Image (cartoon, rainbow, N blue to C red; front, side):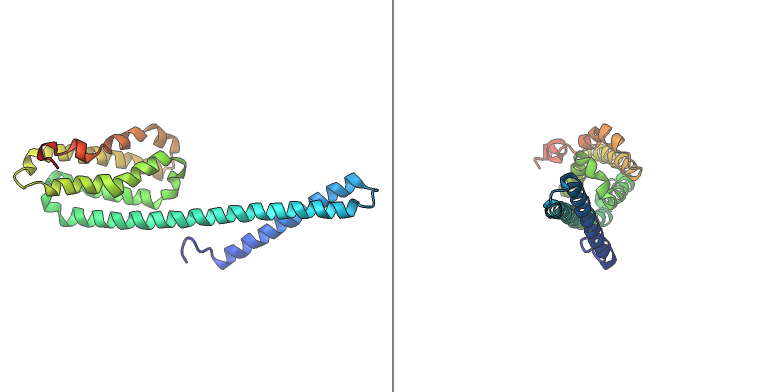
Length: 216
């Protein structure tokens, strides 16, 4: 059962809830208008009309919310699948190309990937912190892979010269991801907003910050 396909039991509960709420809205509207209009002979007819409108409005509102929730669930599922796939590719790159990175960065790179995986598993937690959500998305889809590719693409003779710069950038990213991961796990949105600068600082475009001398 996928995230965008609610279970039959859940669908039945939602259907019953919509019907119950609509019936309650009809009765409330009907009773209020009848009480107000009696002894007018049109009281019951007017009550039925108003009650019907209230029931229809209630059903429509609840149905709209249900559709919105289903769309959001489908979007989350799509984003989650895409980011999980990209993280698998990054994990493979970190493992398979480990010999091309400074040894001191191996553990940090693995921690970055694992931390990002944990954040993605709790992606909906970041819905109320969209700036952090965007920063994490850019880290996975652009910043981290581009940083790794730039270092891998350096001539072997140039790697020692730029190793310290690479290690510094990986260290900054590892710290930012770790703090973001801790705050997501504890659902501390206030801290996420307060410290969003840390992840944003680590997202400086690697083309501007890394290996300028090589003209990459």
